[in-house]
Amino acid sequence: MADRWRAAVDQGLCVGSGLCVSTAPHAFRLDGATRRSRPVTPEVEASDAVLAAAEGCPVEAIVLRLGDGGEPVFPPAE
Image (tube, rainbow, N blue to C red; front, side):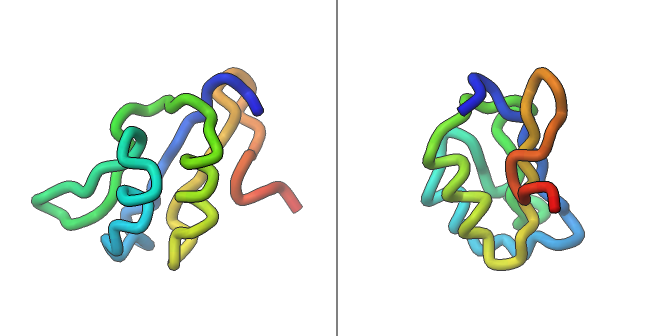
């Protein structure tokens, strides 16, 4: 895994289920005003927990890219 990933949450897709927060609380938070998830910081440490949060999102709202090059981590490039 790369050392850092850029994480983004599509606010138009996010339903605020909180699965990402429970899976990777160091990387994602629920915004109290919008009731949508957001990354804690624009870049996160690459980890199995962050990848599991993206893979487990029920609406596939989380996108992960390599921090240094921008290549897709999740969803994978087709």
